[in-house]
Length: 306
Image 1 (tube, rainbow, N blue to C red):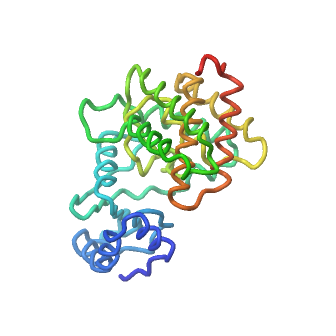
Image 2: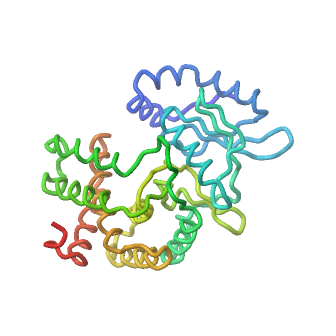
Image 3: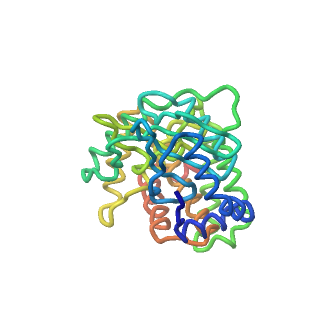
């Protein structure tokens, strides 16, 4: 089956992967045809695409699966290893994979609605917290997975070129870097984290919930809740909703509230700078910096921080 890939996806691929994307796109139809033959698949219209090709498929025996093709080899290896290490009742199962071409055949999660579809924020957050409680495990002794030190190094690079990251101020970037350095030196026990665990990566699976698309990150447990706290924020009452979310995570996961606030604030700065690098900074990202800066000032004495 031939697919007409969406133009925004093609543009994003070329922007991120350059010549590698051009070669991948040229061979895409052949790759899909070969996957259908080799893995006994009838590939359907893809899901909404971001950085990888992901599509539902059906086998000749009627069973449903998902085909995922990851272009970046490092990202593929990290996701595969994270899925293997985090494997359990709360993680999507890998049915087959092929390293050379970045192919994964994954179980199809049914009914598959995301946690974002639950309107009651406290209820959604409690579900996410309980999923995280089952998911996090002590970090492997030796792996090539990214660590929170890599995030620190990204902030160092950004700080050295701070003029390129307006409207985020130099002082804000400097503070985020200082906080990250301080937190990284005070991790008592590192854990293997999903690394991107927000509403859209938690899917309804029968009567339970299953996570997809782990990045694989080594860090403190407080870092795991960051992406969730920065996602699906309301237009009004943001601080109130955010504080309720934090209190639920702190209670269910026995987290340090100050570390949660500091991790989320510093990552909000880093994530916003990443969007500036990608050329499409949004007001929503800038707003999260202000929200968490305000919460940090509310709960943490600045003199103690600095």
